[in-house]
Length: 173
Image (cartoon, rainbow, N blue to C red; front, side):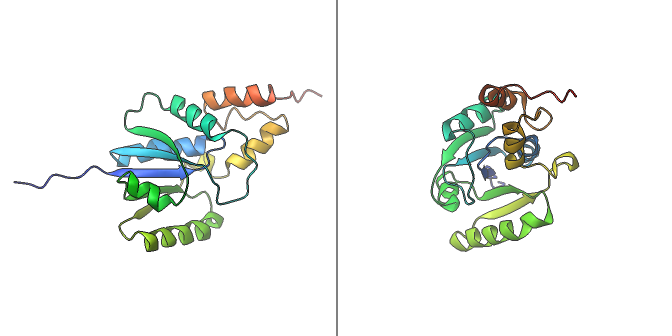
């Protein structure tokens, strides 16, 4: 009798303010390597950020983007990521790395999390080359200044951003 393989559950944590196509790339590839993926929207940020959307708005819009993905769940969480992962029986964290500058911080976090829960593993994923420069803070800033962010966010996110900031300004001279 062969032992039954346990379900591979991963958590992809972040602020997702807003969800970008870089996040989308990591989520879609993450879904190919795990049985279940939990997109965990952090209620408290590890970095000082000016929020664009509330936690509830972020969870709602991300859930709408992935409404047809049965293996994906979107929830908010607070407190330690390891405690959240343990409570969801997820022994794997997925993190995106855009550039070498991300690595030092992410590596420290991964080691701290492993120290807090040795059964936890972290997978670092590089986004598609088209998105290596992309960050949620850049998208927020471009949108706040009237720029077109349609190439950087899923349509449902763009709709919310247009509601918040209005349509992009035209560059007509």
